[in-house]
Structure formats: structure tokens, C-alpha cells
Length: 237
Image (cartoon, rainbow, N blue to C red; front, side, top):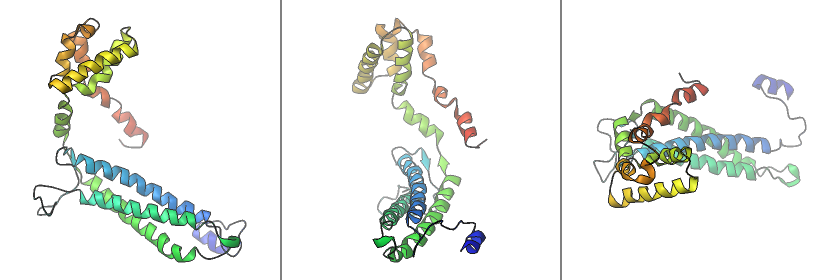
């Protein structure tokens, strides 16, 4: 046992009986399920951003490829959808692996029939999913102009937090600043007006923040100023 485990880079279980306890197997399969869940999270984001009305990113789409069988204009993210489906499969196998932990007398073999399916299936499914999504990321199309267009659809509302914090720094209470910004934001939505212009014309705001000060707050680069630092933490130059 020790020689075989050594050749495989493993350690023999210090205590076992007829079978090795299946908490080890459960940990292995649940780890695969967690990896698959992360891939599903990424793929779900791609699916959302590829919606026709959003279209900020797009997974690879070949010339002549069918996106939707009923709507020719659509480019369905079928690769990302496949990733999400397989993640569900692996999650299901994790449940089976956990149920295999409890054995009669700690030595029955009710686990083995299920393991013949869930162990190879989980490994193969995750290997395929990793390769599939790596291709999606490698060849993904990104549309920054569309991103900017979508952000501008809010007419400046996405900067409401920055304006609120600036008012707080000027001495207003958080409650008062929030109430002012909420009222102006409501007008922006309901009356289809520009948030920036409403702020300039509202004395509750202009008394504390000049036009130049407001203009500095409406800066998209503020939210990505640490991107390079964040990428550096995970080893991306």
C-alpha cells in the first residue's frame, strides 16, 4: 500500500477498514463542484452581458453559425450556457459523494456503484468545461463603446453615490444627503431628465458643490483607477 501510494504521490490512510472512508472522495468531488460553480459564475456573467439589449461582450461566434433557430439576428451564448449546464451536473455528483460518506458499519459498498459514475464523470465534465470556457475567454469580443453607451443611458445616475459622499464631506448628514440625492434621482427617472443638470440647478447641492466640483465627480476613470493593482495581485501584467 505504501509503495503504491508513494508512486502515485499519495499517502496511505493512517486508519482504514475494508474501505477507505468516503469523506476523502466527497472532499474531492465537492472541490470539483466548487471549481465548476466558479466557471458557471463567469459564464453567467457572459450570458448576461451578451443579451441583445446589452451586448457589451460576446463569446466567439463563427461565420455562418446559427445563433437562434427562430430569430436569425440573435447570437445565443451557447458555449457559456453549456458551461452552466455541466456545472449543475457536477454539483449533483457532489451531493451523491456526500451521501456516500455514511456507510453501514463503516464498511459497506453501497458507494461503489455510484462512484463508478460520479468520479470519472465529474473529472471529465470539469476538464471539458475548463477547456470550453478558456476558449470563450481567449476569443471573447469586448465592446467598450457599447459599455459607455449603456452607462450613459442612466444620464449620470450611476454617480449618485459619489455625489452623496461629497455632500457628506461638506458637512451634511448621511440621511440628509441620501434624501436629497434620492429625490433628484427620482426626477431623473420619472421625468427623463439629466441627473447632472438637475444637480447644478438644485440649491441644496449647488450651495455645497460648484459646477467644477460636480464635473470632477462624474469621472468614469475613478472606478477603474486600481485595475492594474488588482490584476497584479493575481499575477496579470
